[in-house]
Amino acid sequence: MTSRKPDEQLARNSRLRLVRPRPLTTARRAVTTRRTRPVPRPPEGTPPPAELARQARAVLADAVRIARWAAVERDRAHDPDAMSATERAAAALGLTPAQVRAGWDRARLAGLVELHGDTARPGWRLRAWDRDDSAVLRGWVALFDAWSLVHPAPADVTPASVAEVVEAVPQVLSLLQLSAGPVLVPALLDLLRQRVAELREERCEVPAAPRPEVTGRPREPYGEPRPGPESLPRLLDWALEGLAAVGALTLGDGHATLTALGNWAVWVKLEQICVAAQSPAGHIEQSAEDMLRGCARLTPGPARVEYRAWLAARPVGSAVTELLAVARGEDALLRGLAFEALRVVGAPAEAEVRAAAEEVCLRPYALLWLAEYEGADPDDAPDVLTREEATWLWVDTAAAVADHGESTLLVRHLESAVQGTVPALLDEVRAVGHPRTVQVLVALAAAHPDPALAKAVRRAAFQVHTGGA
Image (cartoon, rainbow, N blue to C red; front, side):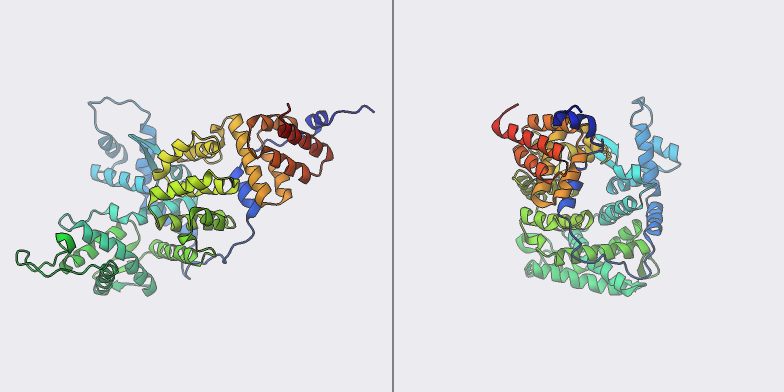
């Protein structure tokens, strides 16, 4: 019997399966144990997700038609003297120009289209619209969150009044949900007045004495006119009409009622607040590093809720800077989680993520983030990485698994490499120059049950450590 060197045996017998690398999934699986609270159930009587998604599709039907029309038309050349895009869309879809403009705004707010500078591109939700109910519901919730942009506020009311009402509307919605039926507008107005007064008291705003030249209108500190109580009924009507315009409630003769979608959305928002308030590490008040460590044991859905709550509690610019600072640290797991949190930030993080793509340790993560932000399917995003960048990311993820996971997961991570054989992987791992290469290879050798493979991996670790070929 002829003997072969370990590398030759591996090349002949130890082929790796060619699978798409999912480094963030692997790293998170390494430390996920269980949920910290049971899966919440929506209120009794809430329709199933498929029915809610059907209703959301109906609300956004025109927006979807316009977004799809724009996706086809964007690559066509047109005579600059011909009809405008709005007129062409109106003619093609049988809508009025006003309906096209309104539908286009809704498409942007719901994430069906994304603006990149002066260029509009189809959003990932548009591609998933017909097959993914969760994408539809997330798109509708984004529109629900932007209700105040869908229906313009009265032009003669001060921005301060509008901002106060927008801030007070969640309490109005909570009353509508608790009532589980129609609520008279006067009752909603009483609650709105009470909440606006509380907001002013929280800000320690004490109205100054009225001045003769302003007839009956109290004034804000520093001389700006305080919104008078006479504007609140009009602003309540505006808020109710805006919420009705996005399908969250229906308006009757002097009363308002949440729709099934609106009732579900209010419940989702309340659940998000409960999750954030009950998080074991107090994530909202923690630093980015502590927040990410606390989220490491959550599955992706609850983790995204935590990210949103943490981001909502601080200026977006400083939050992005803090997350990237954590990503530059030595913990590879936190590096991956920081970019998951940056996916929740979206467009405001683009400039800093593009700059981070120039840093070796952040480049693969930044390139994946940018690919998904620009509309690539998450399964196809790894295609933007070069072979060297993919190998660097494989080592970085292996470091996260070695630091936080079990040895069996590290062995399983071997299958996600882009190389076809273990010898090829080891050659490229040695060449890529990741600072954790030795530790990763030593851990892999210790964990792998195949003696020949473990021996080859240990030899590679020794060669990297001593600077050999």
